[in-house]
Image (cartoon, rainbow, N blue to C red; front, side, top):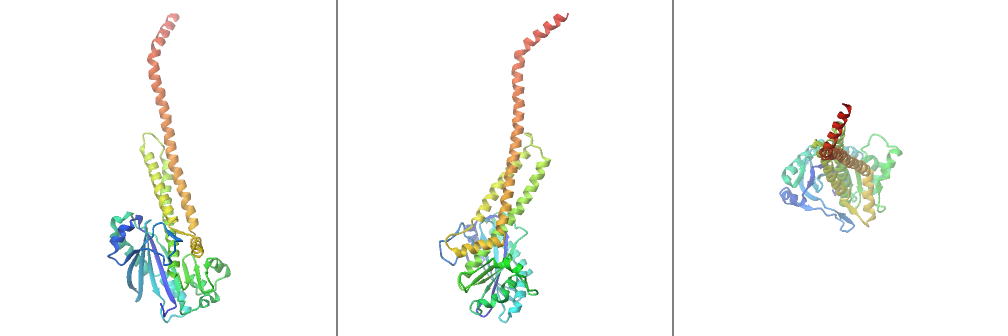
Length: 368
């Protein structure tokens, strides 16, 4: 990157299944390339990973006659992220950068290669993935890392170029209304560094902590993908349960309702546990800069809104489960009351029968 304007990091993030056994994955994937537990370059206790991901160096590949370094990460809650690192051409002009970044960010060959590599990972991991199933959707994100040795910061910030750059806009001059939200997602530690976070791309100009900054933005995108996945899963499950509520009436003779209730309860427990792991996968304590960067990334990617949606659907799922069991218990109580009345009648009728018989005989005699 020494002779270039910078490099582009293009991410493709996938959901592979319910959970990945990282210890098992470490042993199986060592044949693919160098594999190591993830560590932030900044050695500080302020970064607390609940379960650090596994990093895989997948080597260099050639796409469109361009050499690309491919890296991967596996997350224990079933996610995999692929990172394609592409240096800018040595002779590229500033005016050509927007189109260059846009083309690589949307490059179909990276999509196809990503799906192929992920399918290979699933096959290699085997039983190391719990409930393996590749989701047909994925998250994509691009981060441009500027070369601080070749260009000063004002090269990128002049005439709001950086905001046009990460917005892939080269034809029009953006209005202040369009630039302002992106400016609100910009962060600087000093007067000579800058990180800008947009909803589908980012920009990093920093001499230190570049990899850590990119890793934090990557994690925010992984969280977004997983919350999107569980939002879709809960939508599907809830729509099915709603139909069952309408068509199936609770009955003590129909175990289908009880099975549905148990399914709803199981899904609620499993999803709640995974969502909690996702939301708590990284905690930043004491480091104000990285804590702010993490919050900015989550906000710009609208992760809190997705969390609210998922939490609401989890509550709905819990309510449906409780409703099923409540109605079933009510029905059972009513039937038990009827059974008790019948049993009492069976006990009382033999005792009263002689008296009733004598009474009827006496009544007939009087009528005679």
